[in-house]
Length: 251
Image (cartoon, rainbow, N blue to C red; front, top):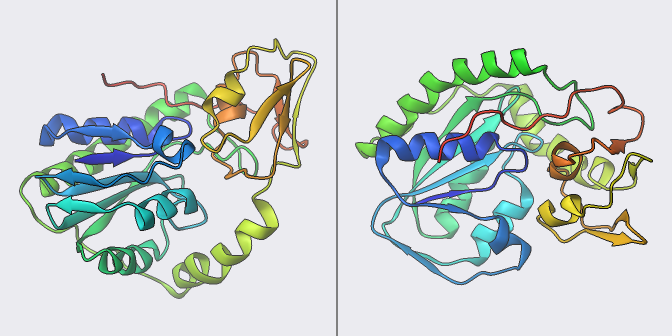
């Protein structure tokens, strides 16, 4: 079974492309994470977890869900991480997670996709995004074939910088950078509530028609990226930058 979490669509697209090859069932974890549904799950086929990369690791909200949800049936688990740069030493921590769940770790794939972290980086134009997605397809398809035939995903080389990024930097990143203090709505807001609807942590509510952010933000960028009126900013950094959501869809 393929389980995915996706704030702006990169991981959903990757998960669905993998499922085209493996013919496996696919499940969006967003609602389970939002409702804190840790009901155990069963799969005859290997578990495949597809997620974005947050500070060179899987998102903590995905890790928490995995830690608290019993996965039974098949004992093999694959991880596929989409990223704008690289996944660092994420595999080390995923291997530990798999062991803690008594699952056999079958490796972690790195899939380069368009950058969506508008809070810190520059997001791509539509043309740039389309090019990056096209380039990602061969890596995704190769990963899908490995999963289909039950082969492990080869381990990526890990540098000292990778170890630091996935270790110390990740530990500091959340308390220092991951908060909603800089999110704000502009006069362009149409009070549609889309931002609240797409937040995986129920961290946004409308007050007098205006979005108000709480303290449980995970920086998935769903609210700012999916706003139909482009009426959300993150401090000054997001001003005049394209709002990225994956333009490719697989039903």
